[in-house]
Amino acid sequence: MEVITSSDDGGAVRTKEVKAFGTAAADANLQQMSIRRREFQVQDVEIEILYCGVCHSDLHTARNEWHGTKYPCVPGHEIVGKVTGVGGEVTKFKVGDLAAVGCMVDSCHDCDYCKEGLEQFCAAGNIQTYNSHDKYIGAETYGGYSESIVVTEDFVLRVPENLDLPATAPLLCAGITTYSPLKHWNVGPGVKVGVVGLGGLGHMAVKIAKAMGAEVVVYTTSPSKVEDARKLGADDVVLSKDKEQMKRYKGKLHFIIDAVSAQHDINSYLKLLRVDGSLVLVGAPEHPLPVAAFNVITHRRTLAGSSIGGIKETQEMLDFCGKHNIVSDIEMIDINQINEAYERLLKGDVKYRFVIDMQSLKSG
Ligand code: NAP
Ligand code: ZN
Image 1 (cartoon, helix red, strand yellow):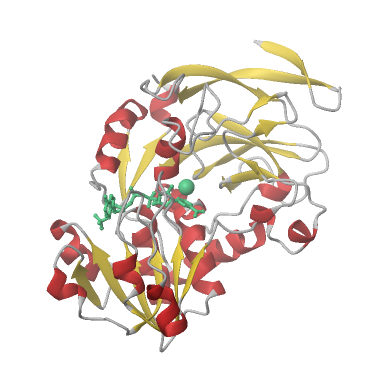
Image 2: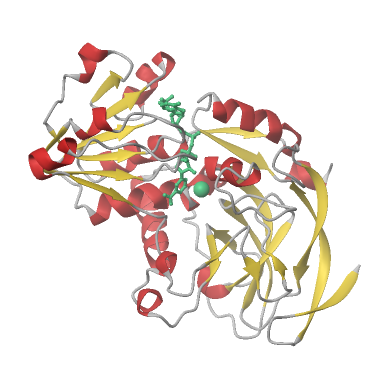
């Protein structure tokens, strides 16, 4: 049913109902619900969602682990699909094209950061794909666990045609979140990189760092992932629960990307860095991680963080993955398996990204 709602600037915007999967409370399971999407405006691209990756951030948000979730919450920010409508001012997409949407759907376009292509740091706050204010319809933004989405053209990405489409979806968050810091910290030939946590982000970090020419050591808590890590391209694998193995690269790594979603001891990783080495947190556990000052004072080490990546860089990453034939290793699920998939994520039991076949929502 069509309903007219009011945008933040007072304009009337037509909306239509679409099927989605989301949650009404932090302690509730995800279930089918209906949400409203605006009819595409002049600068908008309307996308039928074919596949959506399942990021651990979806779980953190659905369960309010970062303490800012508005309900109902429809997660999903690794979206690929087909264009079903374009506004009159859209120039880069036409109906029938493949298109992708990542973690952001808009920003102010005007601050220094947006002008530099760093929309993730927009001074006014970027508009995230879910759980942000939707200025068009005066509600929350709803993510990719849904039939369709409408996004302003500047935040819609092109998908390399040579890549397997479902396995491309995770590049939209796991891909860019690892590509961006690897590039920013000049990872390449001659650089020894540690990847901590072999989940969705971690396995993409391994593939991308190898394609950039680095030497890669994986740190995992899961004995069942040791062989896989090598198959993914790692030069060496360390079982992080084994104290002897943890001594192997003490003071030897140039760069570490930490993609762990839960509480863990980052001090044992800081000690692995050489002088001037950097440990970059991309994982965002619910609670603070203690740091012993001497682990950064000695060796002049840096502890840093990194947030997704800008739109231009996301397209660059997609093109890089197209060129190097990099996609995610995925386990395809039906939308009705999403609650079980979240439980498996909590146990680190994912190899290496769940991707929802959105056909299962349409036919459900
Ligand atoms: P994921 O697929 O669930 O992977 C997380 C991995 O962390 C697990 O597979 C496991 O690897 C390890 N792990 C889990 N619990 C652990 C524990 N208690 N101790 C030690 N290791 C543990 O998650 P993801 O989707 O890759 O996301 C990872 C984190 O990045 C999440 O916190 C997510 O919210 C965050 N994130 C941040 C950004 C950003 O912009 N910075 C973007 C996206 C996601 P092993 O089995 O190998 O130990
Ligand atoms: Zn994500």
